[in-house]
Length: 268
Ligand code: A2P
Image 1 (cartoon, rainbow, N blue to C red):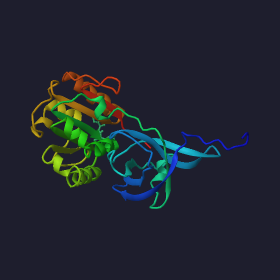
Image 2: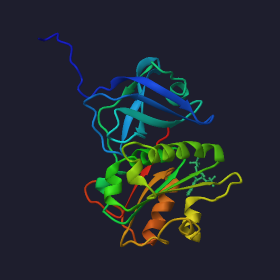
Image 3: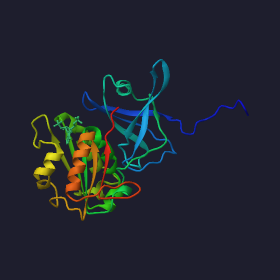
Image 4: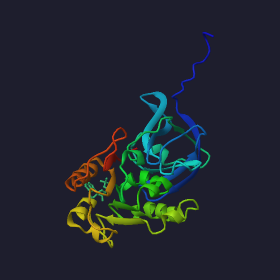
């Protein structure tokens, strides 16, 4: 069979767009079909994209995207920024229901239950589109089996950018599968840094001033029973990691679970 066409088992699959929602002029969310064989752990990311022209050649343009829906859902949700001159998101922001996108086959990531030790409280610190993996995790029953209290923080420059987080937390609370399990165990703290709002300030400042702990059940972070996941820009991730270490938490990985894990939010 010398001339049989070789099928690349790692090639992305083509998935249909089921829904698109524009949140701000800088962000949008979309849902796509999920291949029956696609398995992932809530909190992981995957390569996703479109065919495009790069230096005169048509080829897949793929970027890492956190899956924003839980592992039990039959579709896949994503949350993306729009970069006008971005090779992928300049085009991806125009997708419509019925269009197709390319989906990689190998989900990976460290913002997963397996990489964090059990405990009483799990903090999820996010900025911007870094909230996406937590939108997945807050709808996963495993999270509530492993931790009593979940504290999700989301900090953005402007109030309008917080809308996606409010919508996802609301969806989790009203979810037929996990809504009842969640009850009063999920605390959502939203803050902005470049506009007036009821809570202002970077998450790093809210942690260091103790302002955050006035708003969450259980007070300041204690390494004995508190755990954390961090997802934002490289600077935010590194600065928040340093604060976790000051509180006495040690970093974990898939190979060796620890008290906290980090992942840089991806830019399309
Ligand atoms: P700020 O407005 O003070 O820069 P970005 O869009 O740049 O990723 O920022 C998203 C949010 O993350 C903004 O509220 C921003 O605050 C905040 N941020 C940026 N850098 C850091 C950092 N090193 N530590 C904590 N928060 C940060």
